[in-house]
Length: 397
Image (cartoon, rainbow, N blue to C red; front, side):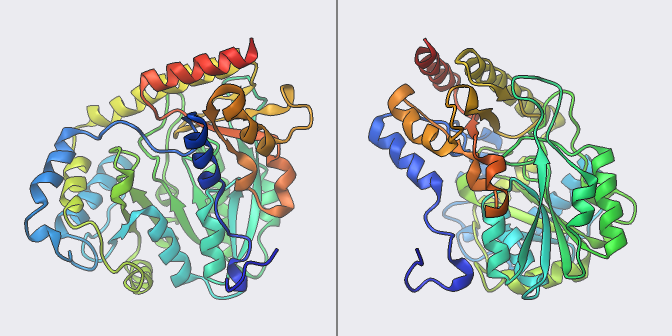
């Protein structure tokens, strides 16, 4: 049904399933493992800087590109962890979270009718941002490993990637570590991506907000580090996931000066600036020692293992992720019709737990690929995960 007043390019992007599932959690008193946000505060070294900045001139508009200290910290951070060198003055732009960075980039770089190639399932804002830019989504499906097994990861068929490239292709949008699957593209996969991008003359926009939440056995490599790629790649990052400050909405985008200047032109007419007191705090966080970053990954990996074990004991075949906040379940063993949305709507009543159907992360043409899949978040306190696992176990009893 057509939504009244809503522009045609945004028809179909109504209220998200996250809102529905969060409302179900409240109505039923369920544990919400649907939306991916932590329930513990960030590090004191970051929070204390923000507290000290409130009530100072930092409450006013920061510079349009972001505060100099945060831009310098982002550049130093990328050089330290990725070996990428960016000029803080011309090649780093601070944004209202990674979502604005991605949206501004698409608005700036995509002409109406241009095609954007991306991996599917996809974070739900991507398709909407492409639609706002007048672009066309060209999805390349990721194939999952068998549920209930460890050691594999979601991957794409290089032939599918090449087949998605048409004369209208303009940009390749990557997300690794990947939401919602938790997969991490390896060097061989990134080499395939680079070969296609270079051969077709595509720009590359890479969403790397989960860069530090990668678990043992996997390695995050930025696409911009591959030969010939820095010149055509914009790298998007954020402090929200790394420092448990998702509500602060402090992100950034880095790349060659002409590309960043184009993005800045669009971004300045969206929020213009944001988060004055939070920008110095994220700068302080980016300078924390290596032990902090390895520690948050190890702690999250432990939480992953708790939830994955509990899901499997409850009879739910689970794909253990290599990174991020999320584990994926295939519900066909417990629901023969494979209806993941119906499973999620019933789960609060059956078990007092909320999850999100993965079908919402697929385009209509590939909806069947995600129909039986459900995503659970494990970025929660130990006692919350323990109780969620106990509730799921009682459902299986």
